[in-house]
Image 1 (cartoon, rainbow, N blue to C red):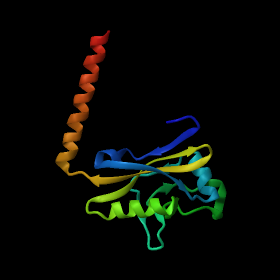
Image 2 (image 1 turned 135 degrees about the vertical axis):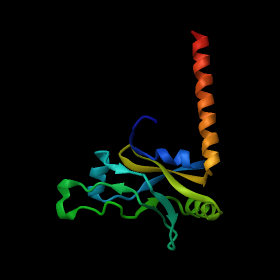
Image 3 (image 1 turned 180 degrees about the vertical axis):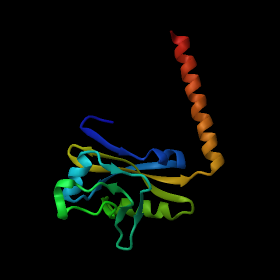
Image 4 (image 1 turned 90 degrees about the vertical axis):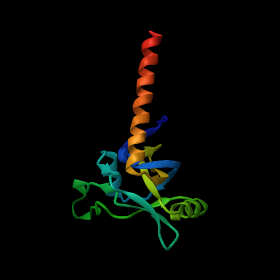
Length: 154
């Protein structure tokens, strides 16, 4: 990633399970104890998804942030729903795209950019089992071609 970016968590399964058509960077509303825990790298995007709610806000569901031990009883709920910071136009556009059949909004990466928590999200279409196999085959072919090319260049 670019300078001033500290990667915290990636959703590795997302690129395997879905075809990502577009990506967007969103701000993330976190409580104080959540920020401390995320800075320590204790967050996971496994099983998380984003959705536009009735109030017209985009939220992330299922993101795990380990409770900060030193917060004691004033800590946070590990899997609470968290609000994403986006412009209204972006929320409407992505909400409409996600309403199409087979599409969803998936979190791809969680990171800090210049001290601010950011979430990279993607509009994605679910892959069928045979599509996943085809993607693996294509990736393996690319690796072999790159390997042969690098062997040839020496």
